[in-house]
Length: 281
Image (cartoon, rainbow, N blue to C red):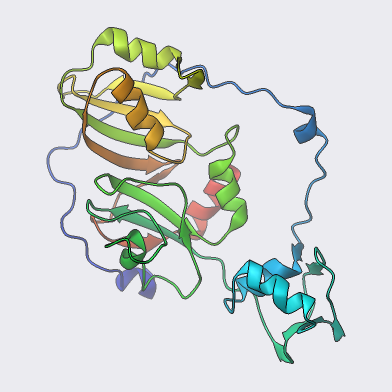
């Protein structure tokens, strides 16, 4: 186990009680998406190139907007030549300097947090306790959470500064599924479960989940729900529409990533194997 892993902040408690398994047999919702011509004809980006403003921002010295100003005023050079062109792309191995000093893009970081209740999913200051407080000592890289969990929601939340991984989650067609353990204020009717399985519209917007099931050995108040959407607002909208209150919302898995060995309130760095599997999803 890495030194960073051993220095993680300690969570309040681990998720107690007997382990409950989600049913293996799920009925998939209608989550089909249609490719549009623009996506099909989009020129693939070169993984060995990066926009200069992003490179400067990734060095940790400023925001991307501030980087644009530094570039425009001639403070940034590439391979000995001042570059003021917006949209200029830096190649792997290029020497980039700011005001004469060489800068380097920050190291990519991937941090998995088991969020407890009472913390807002935001990077803004002045919002009380936030998830950024929980991962403050995880890395020197400027990571941000992918998606949201409400202040009173709990479970897994992934942080990174890797735009490729962020895109995997935010792309509605190929998004990474998240599995939630949900407890309602009353039993979920079978007809409502089937309605969620089939997909339905709320204010003319199709609501579709990947999978949903009652949980073996538990009351009908407890369900497992898998969805690719990165926020939990859509989940609350589903049950609000069907006249149920959510008493507990816990993200128990993100793709193949689980809460195993991560106490509530603690975090870990993804292993190389976990990261490679995530990239292949």
